[in-house]
Length: 133
Image 1 (cartoon, rainbow, N blue to C red):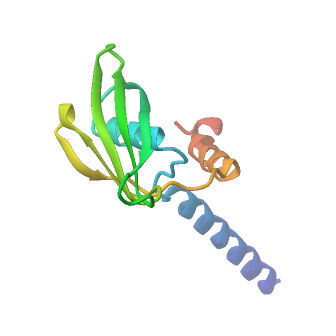
Image 2: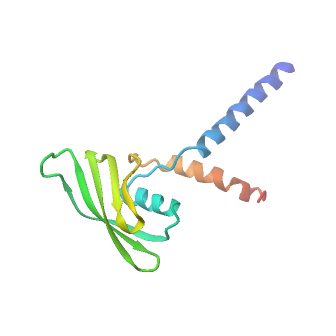
Image 3: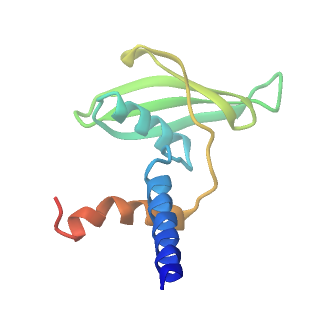
């Protein structure tokens, strides 16, 4: 009987560890507009959408990537900036003078994993589903 309590305790501990691990993951982005929008939202800007325009590989080094950025705010105002990546679409920084952002690093993009995001959102919504909020 004591062994069953130990097994149940270990299983519960692993479940709690898994939930905490999923909730503490940093934001993961699959596109540059999402990453830029996420960073601007974190800074307190109300962003409607972010667009990449005039994308090109650098003319000198075809391994690098660049793009102009157009940020459209909820108020309708447009602001322009630039995205520069050193190695393909990795190790990227963006510039947005209206927000006084110069060489702000962006997280590397990840492949789309909808199951991971669904699990994370389910755990975030769990307290409201259980009526604990």
